[in-house]
Image (cartoon, rainbow, N blue to C red):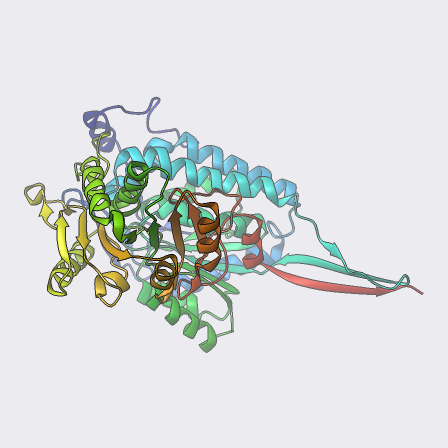
Length: 505
């Protein structure tokens, strides 16, 4: 049995650094119950954005590995070793999996932080428990979901049942590697499918480690696979594979569109996509607590370095309070200054890699060239560490025609847009190709509900930002995707409905 890396959670930077020195990092793929290098022997380096240090060589899988993984997954599915296991028994295995994730929480949090730069305090207090909670909640739900009977004539019985779809390929992003994986693998496994997880090449370490914990929990060989590698190699191979029955994805809208094309070019596999966002956070002058609204608006753009699909990157503020509110935002952002991610006091960590840092810096320059007013941040800092850090940034005087207001930056860059009326706020908020999330701040219950109903977004929060738990579905309208993660609605993505009709003699 794999023992936890530490007996008590570290409490200082030096404690976490000492723990990092004890880490043994696995970089191989996990196929058919065993770790192995890519069939063609290709690797790539996992480089930490904290200091530029190479963490490990990672197996760079491609179509050959995808073929091996899909063959094993399909064989396991057809054998019934997992797919035909009673839901209660699958539940018990997944609950052990969740327990193991919690038991190895320090190690998993450390891998997440070293790999993609998020603060260790967030990795440990948010990412690890949220991952375990997603698996545990889904496991607990699976044996409480019933089939249906159709309203038939008295001499007929119409049964409506759900069956697992088969082999599921899950392609997940680099910003919340474990949480996004858990939202996919938990319902896919709970409903009896075989799952192939393709983590981002930018943050594969926790996915690779989860494979061993899944095996220890009792998930059979072939049922859970991890294939690290690039999107254009192994990701494309999975999307085009004729024996992958379902493809689920979280990431950019452009990649999501390409995956739909691949599905059509292959076997019309089910495709479920959670894509980009440019979420409006609307603050009316009668918001019940402007300081609270400003604090949450700061968190909505600075948490996880702004590398969040639901980031409140468009802040719509009623013009009568805009000047005051921008000042409150700038004050609130003082608690989100970048620091060393292994310092438990750090709230804003490193950007995942150089390409993403360059993208953020480029957009800051675009905002200035478009005529927006830079009122806070906007600089790369701590270059002497070898790490990738940028200040949370605020632009005022923005309009929806500017690229910083219409394009997803995926970094801590906030665009402040003024409005005068409710209708104007709604029009600005909905003037986007995206529709993932939104928020409205007002003390008027009528305004709150009118705006919430009018917003074209999959999640709307009133007088707070980024609410909800595993009981609420998550997903977007428009080009933010389709399907829903979390809640029992997630089971829809991983099951086929079957109608069985019996005529009584």
